[in-house]
Amino acid sequence: MYHNRPHVEDIRAMKARGEKISMLFVTTPEEAAAAHAAGIHMLSIEGKFFDAEMREAAGDCFVQVGLPYGGWGRFEGRAIATGEDYLRAAFHYAGLGGDAYYCSASYDIQKLLCDNHLPVVGHIGLIPSYITWTGWRAVGKTADEAAKLWKHARMLERIGVFAAELEVVPDRVARFLTENSSLVMLGMGAGRYADAQYLFTEDVCGYGRNHMPRHGKAYRNFAPEFERLQNERIAAFREFKADVDSGGYPEAGHSVAIKDDEFDAFMAQVQG
Image 1 (cartoon, rainbow, N blue to C red):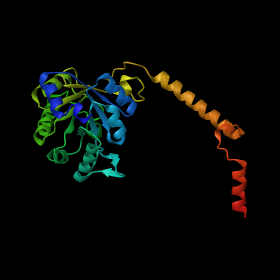
Image 2: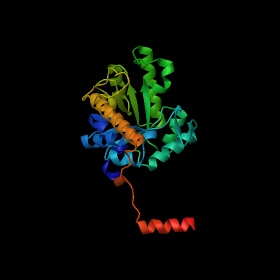
Image 3: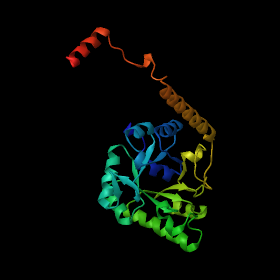
């Protein structure tokens, strides 16, 4: 399977040919398998969700594994902070079949990963782990701020990063960055000119509990069905508890029998 799915060179070639790339954030094997069946090119999977089952479910999709950031996540039971922490996590996920590694840490840590020949995906624009510096808003709406995004993109190129999530950036700024950078720009709310269009499965399927972002688009509404299933789950659990309370469960058919002579022999042994 490894040789059937795309590599970094294939994703770069898609950018060079001007092909649009589809990308989804998934959290379960069922979501990953559905994305593979639908022909989605790239998946983003947080490290805490990524294991051998997820890799198998993702099939031929190119998988970007999100490395935990500081206090935002943990690896091997502790916060990830140093370059060595990031390397250890990245190589662990590489062993499970990751294709690239999202990292929003400092330039020196990103460079360390790149220097160890790991494909790194950075982040430009609205970066959730840096949100205290910008607030939840579009980034790059002023000339100075847009220039900083361009400077950031150039720095990522220099240290060897191959792609970047481009989040909530004005479309014309995103177009300039996409067309003038070797980075594969994974657009989330960055307009039609980004190399990839990247959405969260919970938004696409309409079951997100958070505010739907401006760039989100629901293609189905799973929320009522999920609510119905949860209500059915609660009802089943209540019936089980009532059965336990009343002695209705387990019934004879749920138990394992032992022949009388074997039980008598057992009792003779333990009582003798």
